[in-house]
Image 1 (cartoon, rainbow, N blue to C red):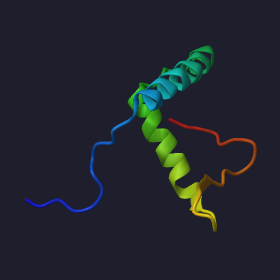
Image 2 (cartoon, rainbow, N blue to C red):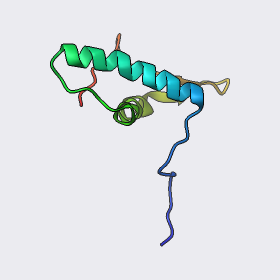
Image 3 (tube, rainbow, N blue to C red):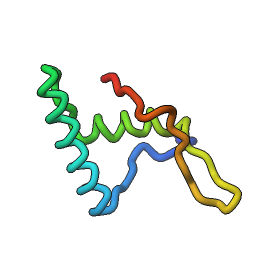
Amino acid sequence: MERHGMPTNLRLTNQEQEDLRKKAIEINKILVRQGMQPMKDSELAHKILEISITCAYVTSSGEIKLDLPGDGVEVKK
């Protein structure tokens, strides 16, 4: 069967993996303090993509930016 569309795997650089791991630790500390379950790194990556993908745009100079609303976006698992 032939597949169309985006690949299902996304390769991260070592730096991106480390940044994601650090952000997961930061977020999970807050979640645990709030009595919630921590998130796996992969769950966090999916949530970040889900939130940010609709906010991505290209500037007139070709730079990719995110137009995030307000001071932050409330993340719900």
